[in-house]
Image (spheres, rainbow, N blue to C red):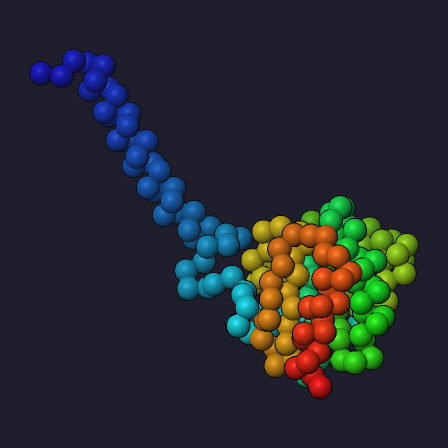
Length: 186
């Protein structure tokens, strides 16, 4: 026969196990989760998720508008140190390759940042590529962003060539990746 403490332990253990199983089941369906059934994180070889956002200037830009161009979709925030560090390199690469069909869409994670801080950072650094505002975090969810910065190198046909999570990316690395993308444009 079991003693009382062993029996209590088994009851508590079963209760914890039952609660854990219920929590796992419920959390799979909570809004904002990145583990939606059947939706894989964007990755190389797959189409980049489509989005349309407004820029700091109020212009509307859709990723689909850039088919035929090599595109870097960079998701960032003004408070993110690696994001801040890689922006000058991104601007230099943009200046060097924009005329050859390269575009940068710098998607500010405005749901975690502010429009004002993004605008101040862009002005302070003389950024001339489009700064898009992800006010509701929809693009962050579509791209299943787990860290900032997150960069998606998109081929002219809309297929993701490479995903880089984290940073900062060095200018030489960016140039190499962009030159590879541009081989598909020309």
